[in-house]
Length: 251
Image 1: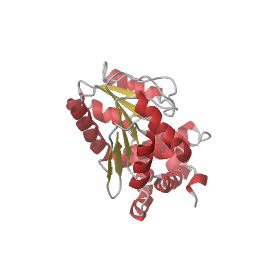
Image 2: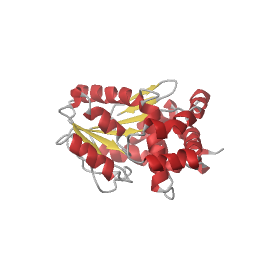
Image 3: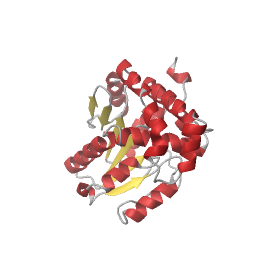
Image 4: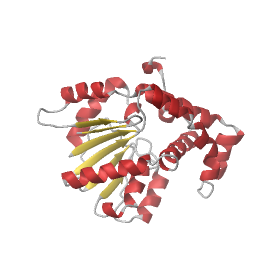
């Protein structure tokens, strides 16, 4: 399979919103209840903000804004302004977050394309979690350049890698997908989850497909190094950390 021909249902323009939302909820469940990934990302973000003296965190491609919520619930982030945004805004979810954390969460209601430069508040950390691989390879250098010009610092977190080990683990994601209607039974959208996960169980299979394609789309550390060297200014520093099943790049 050539990565350039592969697509993901989650980022396909024709994927119906109810299915896209269910896919995002499965991703949230995997990285929050079955794996403490969002907590790990939140800790890394707080460390970066503390070290660099940053005062705002912009969650690019936020979806249901799991990182914004994780940070908002952490007492260490009390003084941080949290700004979720996305090309497909989940305005209802974000409005609930704004009501729950008034004055701290301030979402952007209009679509935000993170391939385009934007003036964010001073001392902002721009964060992209589990979304960089959605950018077509030819456009990724543009992302590096535009976001470097838009924020004080940029951090890209990916919960998967292009390795056999990582791809094997994505197969087990079908279990959280099938359990989703039970795990989120107290949240609105119960009938939607039952429909797409049980009665017409296409979403669990779609999620497995998306996971494998996500692995194939990942950059390895050598690709990151080469592109950062090419796109960033000479005085710009970066750090690349690749674990067995995830990676973090900060510049």
